[in-house]
Length: 117
Image (cartoon, rainbow, N blue to C red; front, side):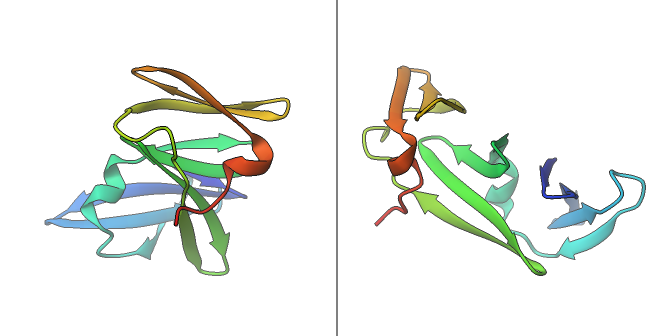
């Protein structure tokens, strides 16, 4: 599960189909947001940081945004993190910190959200 703005999302698996469901009332009721979501979507770990939604898997970092009725994402530049499995993302002051199984990496927040080329 993850939250973005006042929406709570969950990934469901039923009859070999992955779906993304949404609740606008903090989990009281749910409706289908998208069907046939890519199976690897369930492998992402989501983090809300300073009102922004990030996700990571292995050495890849994504930033998600809600635009109307669509959930958009962009992969962020992971220069220096290739082959490192990410275990967490956080921001403190002017730095973004990414912890991995190999150590702690940091980048100035002004460069953290650079899209991957």
